[in-house]
Length: 244
Image 1 (tube, rainbow, N blue to C red):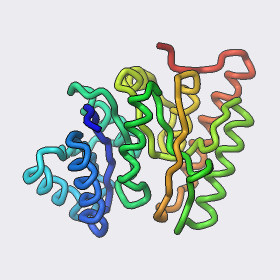
Image 2 (cartoon, helix red, strand yellow):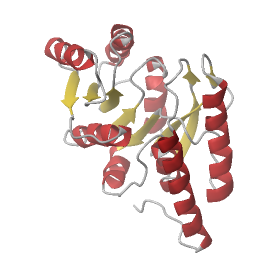
Image 3 (cartoon, one colour):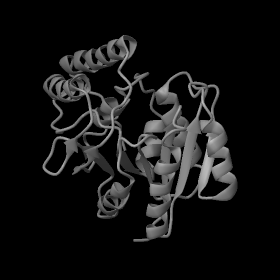
Image 4 (cartoon, rainbow, N blue to C red):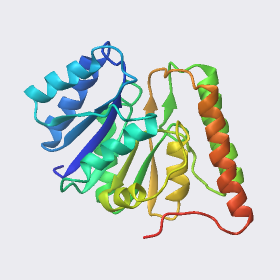
């Protein structure tokens, strides 16, 4: 499979797993014969992640280091990566976590589904073939509970509303970059799914393989704030979605 695509990966304090993660990404890029990776690093990262990224970019031009000290939160990091990627002529843009939570070897599956006509491909841990391993029960509860609550309040029908492994046609990316997203933390992926629910999308099974840092109370508060903002809009008959 040869296609024009970019991968957006925010990184923070990933020095311990950096080489293992990058090695897998390189293997995938080699097999596909295409692809660029935008590594977004900001002030949250206190270890040598930035230096590792810059050294990699010098050696392998498929990796582009984006230093973004102006970022205020993880959503800024994702969006900055997308902003850099849309400057080039890619057909598809994917995002994934920068540690080992997401399996890089699933990238061809995302690209295949995008090439088959889906505008959005969402990774799901809760459909047949998906799974969560090495994750604490609190994160699993938040993911499953967040999915159930969002589907109930917003009328969505996805099996996993909180996964951060996603892929889009570049036209979709341009549209949500023009949108004023409300999320400042982990609800960002849920907000995007809600706004893109009218697009031609598909959920694909992914394996969530490593624990993530605990979710802060501030992030949970922001999630509920954004969720109920869209819920009350829906009650007023003003459901939000990204228009073509």
